[in-house]
Image 1 (cartoon, rainbow, N blue to C red):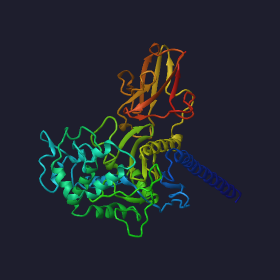
Image 2: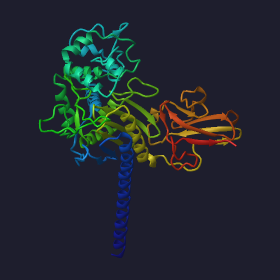
Image 3: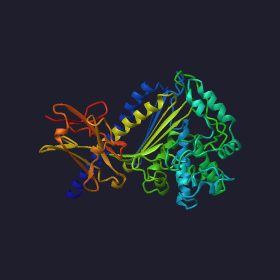
Image 4: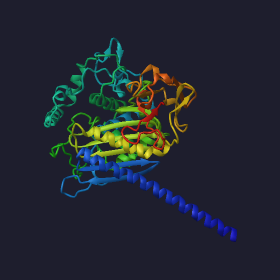
Length: 480
């Protein structure tokens, strides 16, 4: 009896300790979110900031400020926002589903699925394939509609011209302009962000499934993920949050008479968290396909309509920005770490995206810091007359995603492509480079970082004694 009692006491003690650790971990997440919002609200000048974090399957949300100044209308998880180009990810998922279901092939000529004849959609006999289309590499010489002139001289009233163009543009004009498209390069070779490509994908989906694009969204994404407040055309009673420009003027909503596949969705933070959780599921074939390196790029890639996907010390990370006239949203996923973020601000100007990007990077770094703990001097050792740099990729991550590791620093003009600083792979996870000490200036502080695939800049471990305390968190090397 006494033994059983002691075991019960031990069990209760362990349970309480586990709960305390869990509470502390969750508190640290909210603290990081609060810190991020405090900086972002100053930098972005937004009235309202909404932050959603999905970590290890659990969702954390917080809202700051107010939608409209002096109205005390703080956003909630049910507040509806325009999410603009985040819509493209939904279109990409549907295309990825069509591929996994073998309804289309990545190597198919896109004209196989387009209504009408388009002999112009090839370059020197090479057609545009599905994988070129979803990777933003069609070779189109212009977007549809072509708003290049409006973009040349943007100002505070440019939105009026953009909105007018979109209101006057329809599917008939889209297909007429598609016949006049010229390819200025070989498909699959040059990245060019294009709303027209995404709307063309929606048309292809409608022909493949014999259903409307909106129906496909509802049946294959919204209903499956229980996204009850997300849609292209919401009910008349739905209230979409106001968005503003930098002068505090209320901005209009996006207009779209095409398929709305490039930027027409409205959604809530609660629904976006469900979407993030779906995309983070590494066992989900459709999500995995939508993030895949389709063109086997040695640096970054786009998967299915992502802005870019790269690899750093925390594995694959997927980025998407959505910008409407009055709101902006930045989404970042680390599937291998089971972490996803979404930050929404109800302001939109030329600097907003940069402020959002900085906020997302800082928040993700803080939430991932525990995965990158190193003591002592990190990154290099002095052996005889050589500096031996060493990078070890976390064994919990997929090593096949690491195509290369290089060193960029103050000694090579921060150039990750410098052929003299490309590391040698010693085994699946370890990269090394030996450089004669005499090549570095003595008694000088050298700063450097490891760079994965020439694009993923590795953050210095926070507890390494040679890590910068501020700035860009570089590694420090001093040679006596």
